[in-house]
View 1 (spheres, one colour):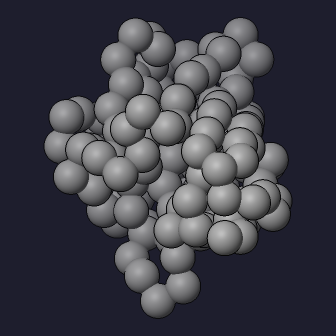
View 2: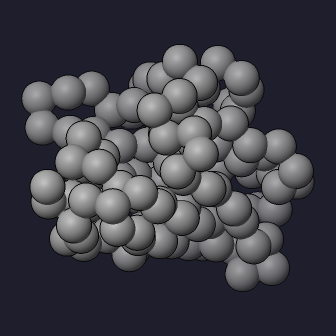
Length: 129
């Protein structure tokens, strides 16, 4: 059974940084496109960034471009999201998902159906202003 686990969330002041991690077990991680999503209270889950299985192609939602960096270590079966210059509007529960489609349409916000792909339980990111 595929298990996805996120970590690294927390409380940070505006302008600060956090690095999220996501591990995926029982999955051919090195063959899976991976994505980060977030969901704020009262809002839909939205795509933040994705990375193709090879690690050589990434896409970002427009509001995080230049501030967030997605990366992966296939040997460790781990996905990362480095978040810099955090803003209060970045406050949300952040989720990792495996097996997502990954293309330039992520720039406009990709709303993945939650009954597809493999999801973790999320890690909370709170940015205080």
